[in-house]
Image (cartoon, rainbow, N blue to C red; front, side, top):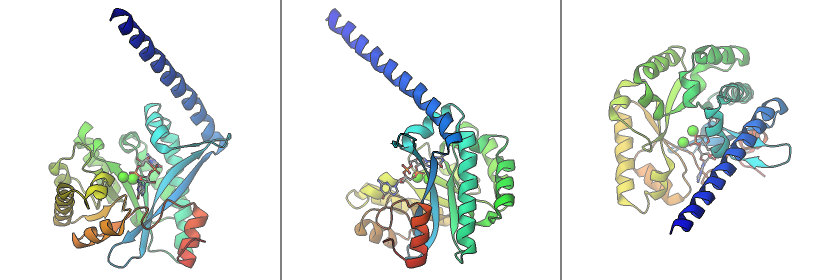
Length: 279
Ligand code: C2E
Ligand code: CA
Ligand code: CA
């Protein structure tokens, strides 16, 4: 039993060493990626349930390394946050997304709202207001068309700072959405106190609601609460017609998901706007 224990330990420690060296390699690659311009943005349409119209898009980062590998944000965003590289990356995301969305506005689609993800570190960082104001001024994108997505986690650490920051953003006209709602340490108290515009119901609830009555009840409750607090509701990860019709029935305002479209390159998104479909 002793020998086995030792082997297990060795296996475990080799594994940890592998993870650590992979992390260091990834961190170095990420630093290079910024200067090499290896990051790209994709845009996923957001659809109004009632009309079926595209009312906006969420910018989602993609990393295609020079070697051709695609690294998913789920893998590098947490490490970018840990190493603070998310600060320059996040600034690039915001600027690039606003610049692109401004082109769509100027091409006659000025009703489109742009959603950009903010990591917790970006959200609480002292520079945020300067970064946002600089970006809007330089790109000419209207503050009222920009929606920043934050997660519930930012409120847990320091609710007072989070509240102050949200008020600053709202004061300049930027909208705020709470992302992945229901998966973190959700507190109904935060919802009441924070000046939020939009609640994004997390994918797991949406994906299970057609088969699990509890998930359906939770989605119904989230829609009810959001509407009573004057927030709109968007469901994420909508993949089936059945999910869509349930969401419609429950009064959900907007949807986003593979049912309508995967995240698209800027060129593909333009094609969708112009032709109503992608070839
Ligand atoms: P998120 O903000 O919750 O973004 C939604 C994710 O769900 C995206 O994954 C999107 O491609 C995926 N998705 C959309 N529709 C469906 C669907 O119908 N079914 C399924 N199964 N998935 C769907 P993605 O692009 O891989 O991004 C993963 C996460 O990485 C994001 O989750 C977000 O937390 C983070 N992320 C992405 N881009 C950025 C960014 O620019 N900045 C920051 N801070 N985080 C980002
Ligand atoms: Ca998001
Ligand atoms: Ca989300």
